[in-house]
Image (cartoon, rainbow, N blue to C red):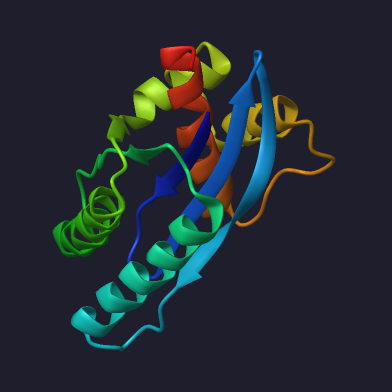
Length: 157
């Protein structure tokens, strides 16, 4: 099973594609889609759509796993991230992918066994699960891979 994980964001959207077979994870590719600050939001969302469409076309995932939003403070940031998340989900649907959504709590619980784990603990578990020498950078990339690993673990695909 090939899974694309998404950590939504307007300025930086993380993605990670993994294969999961026989109880083992393998990294296919991972990175971020960056959009320039001070660019109109419609142009930024188009860049996210175009970039994700290309990544999905190249990697051919079977499912998209995306982090649910959990914001309490900055409403403006929450809205722009929600817009990017919507574009990512639409891109996945247009490519025919089923979409799975996981809260940050579910992702932390699945990877570390503790729902209040800190970012470094989650990143270390991403590194260990994928057998990587170093933690994937930037954080958005590691978070996207965590979403993909969570889907595999939660569904035992």
